[in-house]
Length: 388
Image (cartoon, rainbow, N blue to C red; front, top):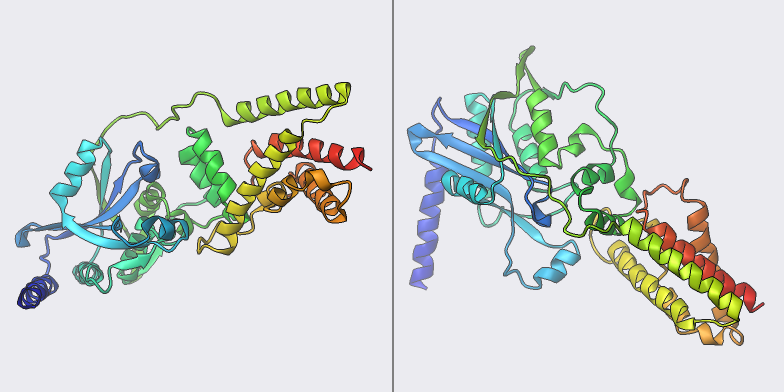
C-alpha cells in the first residue's frame, strides 16, 4: 500500500511539474507527418505533435495512435469497434529513431502560434496524457491519430483558419483509401467488401485530414486570420528523415479480378457441361451459397452489431444474404417445400438485381463481386426454372 501511495505521489509531482512549465519564447510546436510503412496498419502513414523548448530541456512527442495489446478481449473489442486508443508522450529522440529503423520519412511543420497559444496547446496535451483523460474510442474515419491532432491544434488557436485551397477535388472516403491501397488489390477489395455505402459520401477538406498526408498539405496552405491580418499556419517545414522507398506492393502477382473472372469462366463451362449431359453438380451450388452466406453473416455483423460507423448500409448483402446458408442445406427439398422455393426466388431476384443495377447502386462495389454474383444468379436461375 505504501509503494502504491509513493508511486501515486511521484506521478502527481511529475505531472504537476509538467503543468507548471512555462514555455520560453524560443519554444516550438510542430506537426510531424510520417510516411506510409510496409505493413497494413501503417499503410496510411501517421501523425504526431512535437513540443520543443531547448531553454527548458524539453523535447516531447505526443502520439494519439497507441493502444494496449493487454486490453481484455483485445481482438473482440477491435472487431466490434470498441477498442480504446490513447494519447502517449515520449522523448523525441526515441520517436525519430523508431522511424529511422523502419526507413520511413518524417516531415516537420513548425506551427505559427502565439506564445499564449503554444502554452495553451502544451497544457491541453499534458492534460490529455493523464490516465483519466488519455483514452478515446478510436474511429478510423472520424476520430484517429490525425484528427485528434487536427482538432486540438485548431481548438487552441485564437483566430479563423482558412485552408486556402481552391477547387479541391471531390473525393469519397473510399477514393481516399484507394490512393493507398491500389497497389494492394487483394487488400483493397477485401476492405471494400466490408465498407458500406457511407464510405462513398463526398468528403470535405476537414474530413480529408483523417489522412496524415492530407493534413500536412492542408496545414501547409492554411492561413490564420488574427486581428484582420492573414498569417500562415506553418512557419517552416523541415525534412527530419528522408527515405526514397517504393510504394508498398502486394506479394501476390495475380489480380483478384483475373482470379474471379477465371473462376466464372470455368463454372460457366461446367454449367454447359451439366446441361449437355443432363446432370447437376449440387455441391457447386451448396459451396457458392455457403461461401456467400458466411460473407453475408460477416457483413450483417459489422452493420448491426458492431460500433463501426461506415460498415452499415452494405449493398453487398444483395448477393451475400446470410440466409444463403439455410438455402444451401435445403436445396434437396425444393420440390417439396414452398418455403425453400420462395427463398430461392428471392435470393435469385436480389442477386441478379445487383448485377443489372450495379450502375445505380449508391455504393462502389469491388469488381470481384460481379462475376461471383453472376454465376450464383445463373445457377440459382437454373434451379428455380428447371424445377418449375
